Image (cartoon, rainbow, N blue to C red):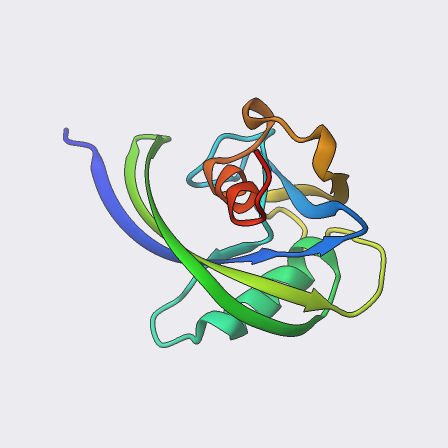
Length: 142
C-alpha cells in the first residue's frame, strides 16, 4: 500500500512583545510537524476560506488571543513526513498585532498542547518547528 501525499496551505502568526515570540507547543495530534516542538500559532486554510480569517480563528483556539491586525510578510514551502503521510506545506507568514492578554489554549483535543511568550534569546533550532525557525530568520534572529 502506497503512502499518501498531501498538500496544505497554512497561515502563521509572527507575534512579538518585549523581545519575546508567541509560540505554541505541538501535541500528539499534530498532523505535519513533530509533537513537542514549539511552533507558530496558525493552521491549514480550508477551501474557500480567507487566510486572515483562518489566522484569527487559529490564534483564538491555540492562544486565546484576539487578532488586531495582520500583514503578509513571506511565504515558505516545506516537505515533511508524519504518520504515513508525505506533506507538501506552503506557509503564509503574517506579522501580527494582538489584543492584550495571557496566552491559553482554548481548543480541546487539537494540535496544540501549550502556548506562551518565549524569550527570543533562548530559542534554539532543535526545539522549534521548521516554520518557527524561519520566523526567527524573518525577525533577523540568528
